[in-house]
Amino acid sequence: MFVAANLAMTPKYGPEELNVATVVDRRVSMESTINKLASTVSSLVPDAAEVEKRLSVLNVGLSISAQLDKLNALSDQLTATAIL
Picture 1 (cartoon, rainbow, N blue to C red):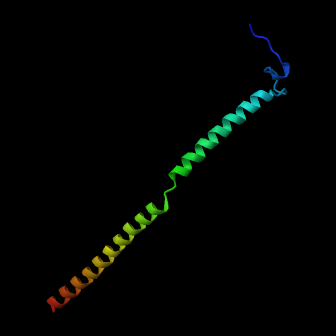
Picture 2 (picture 1 turned 180 degrees about the horizontal axis):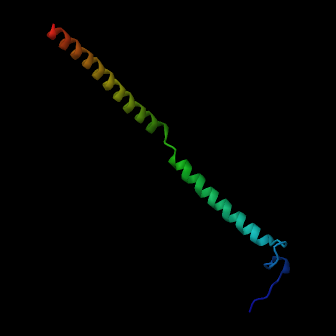
Picture 3 (picture 1 turned 135 degrees about the horizontal axis):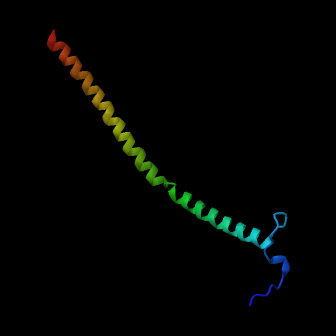
């Protein structure tokens, strides 16, 4: 058997009436969701070591690309002199 100890905490049926307990429950639920999202987002941020590792790989790739450009330029010069 259910007995309401405090009538102010019982659900209301009119749209103009506000149930404080429901508002508090929704706020607690929302805070929990926000905390979960914040922890997920913070776990997605890479640490400094990982960022430096990715940058070094990128710099190696750029260095290789520059070396290939020089090699292509030399190849073009050799081809041009061989034709003459």
